[in-house]
Length: 537
Image (cartoon, rainbow, N blue to C red; front, side, top):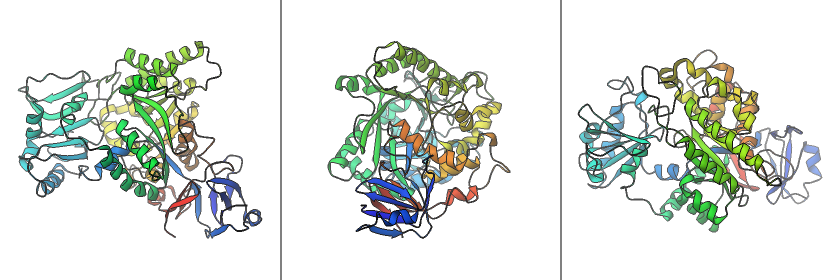
């Protein structure tokens, strides 16, 4: 017998063998039956019965790439995602007015590519801009991409950065014509500022994450793949110890901790249904916005800029090889076509190494590329051939399309190419890269299906519309695809008997409505482990 029966529902199961249903029966934390209303009556003895009045039900959604600690702490900081430089500076000034002198001001989200004059050409702001509104507070704001930072003069002074400070390896201090730092730091140069900022305690992170969880529930998320560091892993463990971890977390490990992970004997998939180890995360390059993504040919309008190689190809191979030998899969951030090409070369060599090893009973490791924003045509089929997961964020396509056209030109035909990857046989795992973008998964589904922004642009069919997906394919990226990427497709990702009872109830049927309306979807209820963590009906 069941504990709970949801009936008179419009259920999209994501189970190919039984794609539609009217009712679902749950015992404890497990789905025990899915079928029509009459089938459920014999399972309803002493069960709680909930009539959903025809509402749409689907599996809980999984964000396959976000930064939970960054999101949580960012809720307290300046929202730097402003449409103009002037508005952003006003937000900084407003925070200055209520903050004691010499206390750090933090924020995230600025994007010089969307500002009007004087930055219509995508020019970076400078320390002088911040100095005008915050001369007595150290200020550090990270760009929307997460691959550039912007500091004022006081912050530079506190960090001891002058015209004589050399660029660090794999990073750049942007300088003016006299050689003086402008206040912009790219890639690993960002550490010159971030390392001197007082860090929050682990328990402060726990408190911030606790406040964040209800927001994720209301968005329809039942699981995430978290890409932050060791402190975030500690925070997730503390929430779990306290019985407060009401979200399923698959945790990546930064490559800087690879030796420690190997020494501890950690393997991908270790953990339980609430918290488990996923992959080792490394970076191949930067990002499109600051033009640090690594390119085969220079950016449009440039004769020399090909971006930044954050990690040398040989070093990447050695990291992935060591991780693989220890039973840890790898996931590598790669955005530019040169970066994705190099990472595929690395995985090709590691796959050959894996086949030579005698561990015939070991499961095949599920390596990933994060973002896969631009591929050279010669590389379109290689993810599928190498069984490498394409971990992509559909919202990036509609957010970035204008600067992709500006900086990549005709090469954008191979950008954010989800349909190409499906056709090549690659598994898609979808996420948001929050807080770079919103973790609202319906914005991502909308972007994948329409290739258009919520204002309808570009008309009539979207940006490179041949890459559009069906709603079912887009949802699969946020369900079974993401579950596969965390070694959990047998436990979640579809509403199938024997799987965990993670589901959401929506205010509309996203599979049948006009696709532009998907972005406005509201989540009426979210269930995790057979219990409602959010319910608005």
